[in-house]
Amino acid sequence: MSILVIAEHDNSTLKQSTLNVVAAANAVGGDVDVLVAGESVGGVAESAAKIAGINKVFVADNAAYGHFLGENLAELVAEVGKTYSHIFTGAGTTGKDFMPRVAALLDVAQVSDIMSVESEDTFVRPIYAGNAMATVKSNDPIKVVTVRATAFDPVSGEGGDASVEALDLVKDAGLSEFVREELAKSDRPDLASADVVVSGGRGMQNGENFKMLESLADVLGAGLGASRAAVDAGFVPNDMQVGQTGKIVAPQLYIAVGISGAIQHMAGMGDSKVIVAINKDEDAPIFQVADYGLVADLFEAVPKLEEELKKVL
Amino acid sequence: MKVLVAVKRVIDYNVKVRVKPDHSGVDLANVKMAMNPFCEIAVEEAVRLKEKGVATEIVVVTIGPKAAQEQIRTALALGCDRGIHIATDEEVQSLEAAKLLKAVVEKEEPKLVFLGKQSIDSDNNQTGQMLAALTGMGQGTFASEVAVEGDKVQVTREIDGGLMTVSLGLPAVVTTDLRLNEPRYASLPNIMKAKKKPLEAISPADLGVDIAAHLTTLKVEAPAERKGGIKVASVEELVDKLKNEAKVI
Ligand SMILES: Cc1cc2nc3c(=O)[nH]c(=O)nc-3n(C[C@H](O)[C@H](O)[C@H](O)COP(=O)(O)OP(=O)(O)OC[C@H]3O[C@@H](n4cnc5c(N)ncnc54)[C@H](O)[C@@H]3O)c2cc1C
Ligand SMILES: Nc1ncnc2c1ncn2[C@@H]1O[C@H](COP(=O)(O)O)[C@@H](O)[C@H]1O
Image (cartoon, rainbow over all chains, first blue to last red; front, side):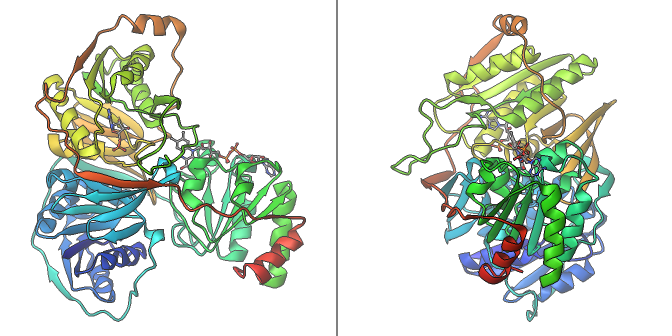
């Protein structure tokens, strides 16, 4: 078995999720190599080389990969990955974009969003927004897999000493061009890896009221999330959406404020260790999964909660 | 220009699925079926392009059993012009769906192909990207804005960090995200008119595509149930529980 893990990063830092994906690769067994593709990614490659237990780091450093265009990445990954038994990456939007293209170029199926590794060819993955778990066996010579990072405990990002090899492979498919990007800037912990997440829903009523949650999140050192309804209504940007079609989070503590608990929302946070719900409707479905439910008007409860937390933190 | 839209028949998104006792899958007997919500958005976007005079003809295609013609008719009622039903009772996985759609693309030669970003049954999020790879087209995935300009299309994509805009040469594949548009409802007169629009049925064999699955589902189980918790009476009690019982703060 030989596994190629495609690192997730933003050209300057290695994303934590890469450590979870390496953990999933380790569950398969065999040598794990990491591919870092991007532009000016020397620092990322250095971090990748320190990941515990990996064999080798390949670096494809070129402007063609700078914006992670799926067409270019797919050609690179298919070329580098064709001699491996497995190709793994995280199920973030970059992986979701290029990985199925890799699978098609290699004429194999993709197994999306795995939550456990049963054996070298068999994986468990959620279907129907997590309302069912499918155990799926791949009959292909190369297993192309995206990994739900939150389902695997990360390996250590320190202590490794893998060799780094530069690849002179430039794949520019010429099909797409980067135009611009608007990235949310935030000093808050990354939603996907934060220990505590505070999320707001339609009950927040407007974007201005999210300041209350920001302030609560500051006290807790929490990431900030939202339901689809809050994003669609324009209260907050799309990168905050938690759910079946947004981000998957599994923090130690998830606080849902003014969120009803639709299955599509629960698909994104149902694996949190402790769930708190604040909702004025005692019959809201979110209370069926909440460890601690508080039936209250959020406009009273949230400032109060912040005050009480300040006393004990 | 011609636009192709791929739509899938899936379980209605409001239905809470139940796993079959023999773990072979989920129970679809007597369950409400509908067009995949992301495909509704794909249809809507194509129809808007036609209303703007950018698209001249919209062809809608589905792969699935006879009953999937209902979803074709819905798309025709919403403004698509012509339907293609690739008829099969077999389970068709994403790679094979992409191969079938590729065969349709080669025949129809559309300038733009719209797909949903994800089917809400398999949650695969693969078919559009695979189709783009197989046809050598660029891909604008998870689109929240689409603008056709000459022989290019600009697609704004919802990514983890925010939004990203790419420019693709035509023909191209676009997969739709939730905020691209708000789909309309079909009016009764349009539902009646849709019954007369052309709908062609073909088989995977007609297209020369082998649809044998590469993945085998060994079993389907219900997810681990979360134990329902308790209701707390006050914010003070909540903080106390979080600190002293759950020990998460
Ligand atoms: C294909 C598809 C994909 C989807 N993907 C996602 C997804 O990824 N993520 C997601 O979140 N949703 C998703 N949805 C949408 C989902 O079905 C729900 O519509 C959405 O989650 C509802 O958001 P909400 O709970 O904020 O709003 P609502 O359901 O309107 O709930 C608002 C809640 O706020 C409470 N409330 C109101 N005022 C107060 C107050 N003053 N104090 C306390 N409580 C108050 C109300 O009692 C209510 O329970 C998807 C839907 C579809 C069809
Ligand atoms: N059987 C099918 N028939 C038509 N279109 C499909 C089919 N399966 C997938 N698609 C298209 O591909 C998109 C993504 O599906 P998936 O890759 O299965 O998540 C869907 O929203 C459809 O547009």
